[in-house]
Structures are given as structure tokens and as C-alpha cells.
Amino acid sequence: MLLQGEVKVYATDENGREITYGTIVAGDYFGEMSLDGGPRSASVMTLEPCLCALLSRAAVQQHLAEEPAFAMHLVTQVIRRARSATETARQMALLDVYGRVIHTLEGEQGPASMQAPVQLTQITHQQIASRVGASREMVSRLLKDLEKGGYVELGIKRITLKKKLPARW
Image (cartoon, rainbow, N blue to C red; front, side, top):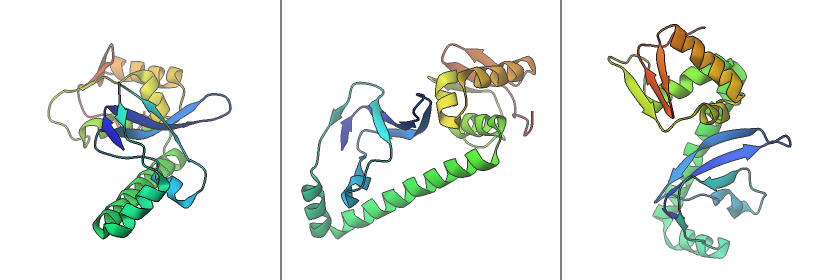
């Protein structure tokens, strides 16, 4: 259970390439897949100082038996995370790198039909690359091209979406 802070959930391959699945904030939990006794499917890394409570498998199982409402909450959480993983797999399979980058940028603030410039802060090219399964260099090239086209303005850990991003590039 994450009591304070924020963590990212990610996986790496044997070459050190990383894919970020998402973030978890205080009040949420992770590691629930260990309840079946199988291996972990992702790693977790702190993004800021964190305080965690470690709950044993036996304690969680006892709580599930005693609190059916929490059991339903856990099932709902697992379903939500499975849907998110399915969406990530769909994007990886069906969208090119540009499409995944655009989906990530627009996903930060909602639909692409924005009315005014939108500033995305605390996001780096590497973080985008880790989310979309591409190299930082590829993401930087795409963002530079979008900047030349007047669609975005780039800053340090800041990207401003100036107008609706084109569906294709």
C-alpha cells in the first residue's frame, strides 16, 4: 500500500529498454498479482520520497474474507489495470510511433479537440519514449518536427500543445 508519494510501474528488457505502464499515487496499492503466487509482471520505482505499508499475502487474504466490499474493490482494480494493459498492447500493435506519441500527449489533458494552448509540465522526452515503447531520439525528432510545424512549443520538462495535433505525420 502506498501511503505517501508516487511510483511508476514499468518493465525492462535484457538490453535495458523500458516501457512505463503507469503511475500509482498515495492511497493506492500495487503487487496484488502476487496473490496467485505467480511471478511479478512489472517493477515499481519511486518517483519521489515514498512511504509504503507492506501487507503479507495472508493478511490480504484474511481481509478479503472478512470484507467482501474490499474484495469487489480489488476485482474492479484488477479489471481496470487489465483494461489499461490491453489498451497499451492495442496501441503498440496498431499505432505507429507517431500515433502512440500523440495519444500520450493528448492523454495528458484529454481529447485532442482543445480550444486553447495546453501546457504539459514535468514530462520529458525520455518519459514519453518509455510510455510509447520508442527511443528518446525518435520522440525528440517527432516533437521537433511538430514544433517546426507550429503544433507544439518545447521547453525544459514542458511541452505546450498550441493547436490540435494532426492525425498523421
